[in-house]
Length: 85
Image (cartoon, rainbow, N blue to C red; front, top):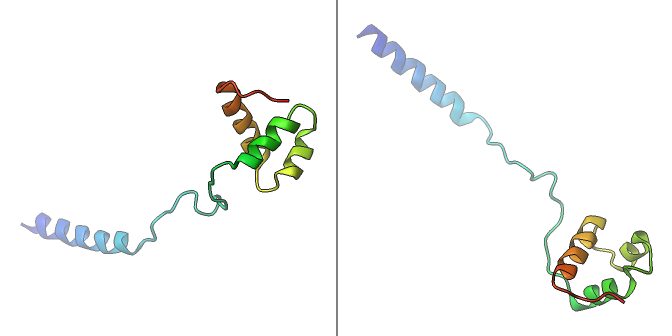
């Protein structure tokens, strides 16, 4: 009987402690952007200038997109047989 009371006491105390701990939210501090679909104007800019301009110039033309996003979009368009000028 004594062990049962002791184990209940320990469990109740540990539960109180665990309930007061802050929960962990992963990736909230790192993610500072919102996903948005590519517009036709952005895609047309990629089609026109991707092979003729440097990646920095293309990033300047499409300011809200990162280098990785631009490369991923180009791969997406190539996969769908979209021609680049």
